[in-house]
Image 1 (cartoon, helix red, strand yellow):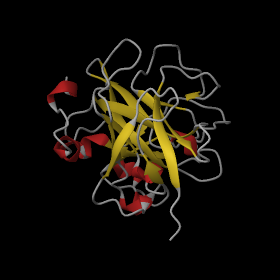
Image 2 (tube, one colour):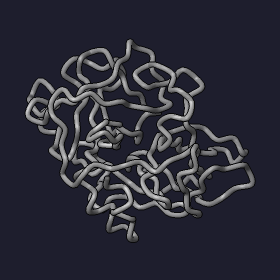
Image 3 (cartoon, helix red, strand yellow):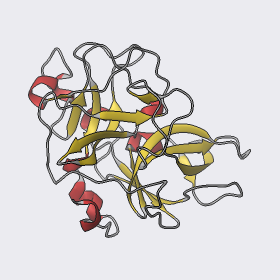
Image 4 (cartoon, one colour):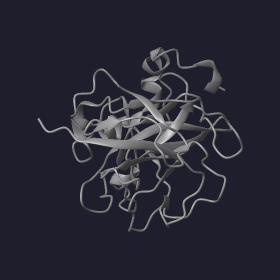
Length: 250
């Protein structure tokens, strides 16, 4: 087996400067402060490239998709370049088996040093355990992926619809959230692991982690983007090294 060791860092930034998404529009400065860019130094040259998104969910933890990191062997730690957040440990959900259709596409990255709300970055709020959103509820996707179609904010598609044969069928699990599927929106690889941001009870919460969608073409009708449902994995998250449950449950 050939193992590729690469350096990784987590880059926290509060706006997009290269025409990527929120629904196709540039994010305003100092918004979506919990969004992070997971970046790799493939050639050990001090040049980092974005591969996936993620969310700050605790002073010590970043949440992302398991498929974003399971392909790589990370050499974690602070490097001799100006890093915003440095990784220490990767925790993948124990039931993740590499098959997106089986779900559990979620992972946590533990940081070397704690991260605190400081006006530029912020710890996100999370949904309540097993909380679901109603059909048609509008959310926002943020990220740095390559997006080139007419874009919009995705509406949630209830599981009863998303699991129909003409939609995603049996691979749309109850532990997932579907959003979009109107033929207008596309999520590309660079957005994997990023948040589905939804305003509930007057608070922005990350309800989903980008997992999969239609490959190779713009978001097909009846083929919405599929997210790991965060509310289905809160008990696991809080069990990981005593991640602080009370801090983000408003």
